[in-house]
Amino acid sequence: MDDELRQLAEEATAAIVQATDEKQLEAVRVKYLGRKGLLRQLQQGMKDVPAEDKPRVGKLMNEVSEQLKAVFAQRQEELAAGEPALRVDTESVDVTLPGRNVRIGKRHPLLAALDHMIEIFLGLGFSVVEGPEVENYYYSFEALNYPDYHPAMDEQATFYVSDDVLLRSQTSTVQIRAMEQTQPPVRIIVPGRCFRRDTVDATHCHTFYQLEGLLVDEGVTFADLKGTLEAFATGMFGEKCHMRFRPDFFPFTEPSAEIALTCILCGGEGCRVCSQTGWVEVGGSGMVDPNVLEKVGYDSERYTGFAFGMGVERLAMLMHGIDDIRLFYSGDMRFLKQF
Image (tube, rainbow, N blue to C red; front, side, top):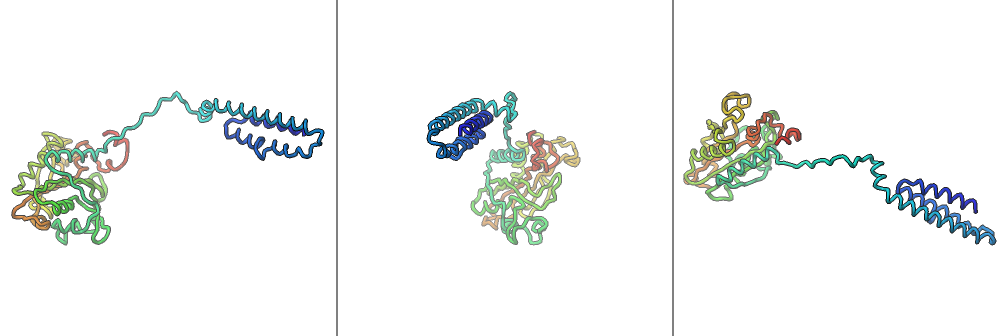
């Protein structure tokens, strides 16, 4: 028994000293000093020791136990004191390296352009109204005076959820909802996302942003429409930017006009972006068709109005000289961090 105790003391002491962290040290304690450890097993063998040897063996066993506990406590203190330095060494962390700068987020250039547009129209007395992106057939086409044979209703042009439910292809749907709930005068803009089955290329995308405008009151004329949009163009791009109107057709306006802006990139001189014309088309406009006013219960003999819609991506591209709409949706930080 004496030799077994001395051998146990040597092995346990060596194991305790060689432990490199608290987890290893705890494992050594459980192995040698735990309730089911090796020292406990030797203590249970005291019943087999002759009576005349029990006092001497018992004393030696207590000495070994106290010695191991002292060595364990000392090693525990050493590991606790030296743990930070040990962790730095094992993880190979160079604490002298400079810290990394925190990247500060900024407004996406597309949404920043939309905010600027909204700010201008708020200054012109318009209010912001929003509506659902998933619409029904009535608000998307019927209430907007679309004929049954119009190609925009075709499944090749519109995302249908069901026969009567679809993703809106323009924010004009919100004009109807707003007029149903409000009596003239109405002066609103409707910013939001739209969806069309367009093939994605440098100037088209299946998902895009649009800003729609509507003004209905007594005595509203086409001259009011032109003056409003000229004021917007000046506020957006400065005094050198002008707006051009050319005859067009939209089911919900009559007469209708295409909106084009002076090409900011070439100053109207002609370049690749504007196809050498000096003008860039940005949307459509016109006087609200009397049929649309009658649909919402307005007296078309008393009230007139104008409406317009502009692609936000097209204007943002002009603002920043961007020639590919896909860059807005690429998520490429090399592009986005420039703004």
